[in-house]
Image (cartoon, rainbow, N blue to C red):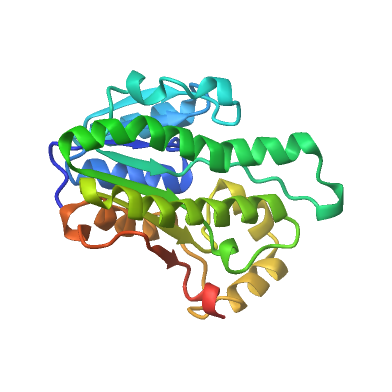
Length: 246
C-alpha cells in the first residue's frame, strides 16, 4: 500500500480518527495536508508526529460548517490525489428538540462540505487520470443513535453520494468509497465511555466485545487510497467489530 508521490488532504485530522489516518498515509509515503477548523495545539501535534517520523505535512485551517469557508480550499492546498473526508459535527439531542441552526451546522459540515471539496478535487484527479475519494461515515448508517438523528442521517446521505459518484467518476480512474467506523475511543467518546456501566453496555453490543482505537480504522483507508485498492469503488466498508450486523 505504497503512496509515495501522492498528496492526501485529510479533513478533521488534528486528532482522533483523522489524525490516525493522516499519520498512516504519511507513513506510506504520501504528502499530507492536515486540516482542522482553526490552528491549534492538536493540529501542531499531528504535524510534528508526521514530520518526526520522516513524513511531509502542511496545514490548512477552515471551519467546514460555514459554506462561505469552502471555496478555494483544495486550491489552497495545491490540489490533491487522495481526499479523505473525515471532519464531522455531532450534536446529541432528542429529535424533537433539534433546532434549525443545529441541523444546518451538522449538515453543512457532514454533507455539503464533502460535496464541495469533492467538486474542487476532482478536476485535479481527472487531469492525472487517478484519484481516491474516501468518506468517513459511521456505524450509525446501519444503527442510528436515537439522540443523533441529524448526524446519522448526514452519514447515510454521504454514503448515497459515494455510490452515485463512484459510477460517474469510474471512467477517470477515480474510486469513491466510504469507511464506516463503529464505536472508536476518541475525544468525542471519552466522557460517555468513562461511565463503566455504559462502557460495559456498549462493549456488550459489539460482537467482538470491545470498542476500537483510531488506528483500527486507518489501514482500511490506506488500502482504499492505494493501488492495492484500485478495484474497490462505490463501497461502504464497516470497521466496527461487527456492530452493524448485531
